[in-house]
Image 1 (cartoon, one colour):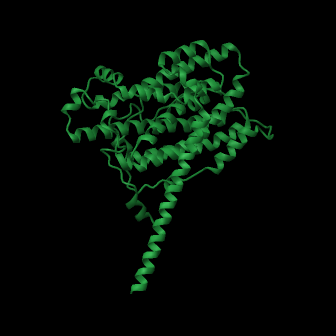
Image 2 (cartoon, rainbow, N blue to C red):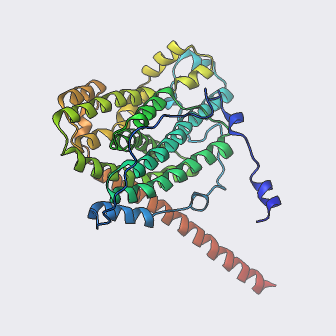
Image 3 (cartoon, rainbow, N blue to C red):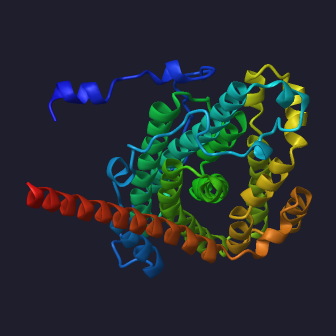
Length: 380
């Protein structure tokens, strides 16, 4: 493709012009601490991690090709969200809104959600690179290198969706930025695993899954299904590495990490209210917070969001009394017995089924095209 054609197809649009409100700082710098670790023992490594590394290599894909970007998206109903799922539904604000206003609200909510996904994926990319640098085991370095590429692909895909289909972005949520900063500033090599692989990625996976399973729109469904196929490996990697390491820690060291998890879970719970969206519609912040807290849909959403985190935290050996009490307070304690392996297997199967359906549809279309050409030739 020559340069003129490329420019015609891919006009440059500054992200800054698409932000609803601009980021406080265009470049966020987090001071790094901790050691870069080299391992000169090139042994065989752990079979489970090396198998995951091989899978990570085998499952690489191109977001520009695997996803059908020609699919149209209505920016005022990008996900097919029902009225009942909107925070303002049933309030006096909703009653005063025109259909156009409601469509604009849907656009803003989807932009806000996918913007947080985008910022989280960039954070995951940086954390995965930090793990390559700091983790002492070579097999873990190998796998983290494949994950870094995965996260770059995810950030690319979410950015493209927001730029070309919605034309709108939101800055990173304060709570997400706070947890990401705490994760990156910690000098202990296991903290990027715990903060990113278990908390941020675990929460994102549940949010991705809920939208994937409820959206009626094919493009966001494809994006979420394919991203989740990668993320299933990432969470498995974090579980393996941390479970092995945490058996070696003292009770005091485990308690310290449990405190980090408790604080992180409360931050993540409070991150997903979308108060910023309501503020942009002229609703004062305190009232927006109250409306969000009263939303039945948000209560259900929150509980489902912890369906990936709680069983993972329990599995890696962080299950002290204070942590259990925090999960009781959040109403998610019973999720500790969820079958995480089954959820991850389903994530992979859904992506593979989408591929099969797309290939079958494309093959059917090709056959019809060939048969049509044959018939046209015969008649002429």
